[in-house]
Image 1 (cartoon, helix red, strand yellow):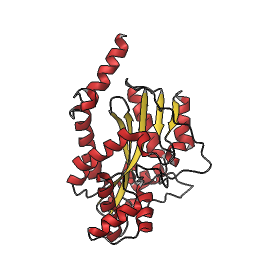
Image 2 (tube, one colour; image 1 turned 90 degrees about the vertical axis):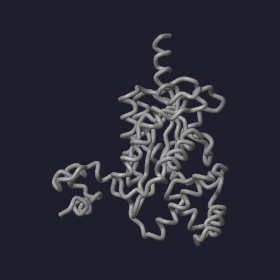
Image 3 (spheres, one colour; image 1 turned 180 degrees about the horizontal axis):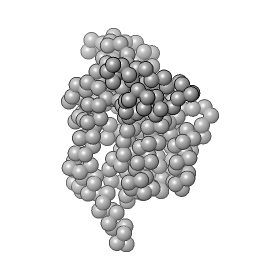
Image 4 (cartoon, helix red, strand yellow; image 1 turned 90 degrees about the horizontal axis):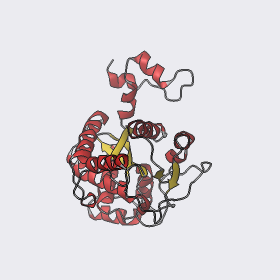
Length: 284
């Protein structure tokens, strides 16, 4: 029996055996579960990939404009279908409108703390967000933890579910490597309002900031990261599966952090800016 066939035997709803125990019994890596893409029919996947390409190029397009743009390019999809798929993909236009981040009605919402706040040093503010990554026969979700001032990617994870655990794993890795920020900013998605995420931050004494409902610009730097990642890596490869997606993203993040110059950082890379700030803070 192949590893893929054994992965299909996993029962995520089983209460008697944890995922870790099931993986051990089936002799597969638990992490491999995250890299098995969510499957859909080929027509829907092609449409979703094209929606993502259009949105990456024109982030101010809403579902009506994207549907019209798709029609001109040979894709037939009504506005309501486009809106539904954008919701699955986590895409939200710049303007205020329907909030495609799935907010949990019982989770607390925190105020936005960054308005008119000068953010000029490393570990002052971190931000996080989730994006859609297309692969052959399916798609995955990517979460990134980023330092706001230096644009450094501190940690990231791929997953085929939006249950929030992969976000907490990335957050814990970032804290273990770089300490804690004063403020963490996210949108109001259920992954960032759930108990595990909130508890991790409050126990670390991190202030919690959340974007205004439907406000893309409140987390603008991580949105720019998505655009660069997709244009410079994801769309240059025909990603076959989650394992290839992980390799491609890892290579690009390494390049982005250590080599890619930013005009806003005086042509330094995010790594240079981050560690320069750390050295300056220790010297002070």
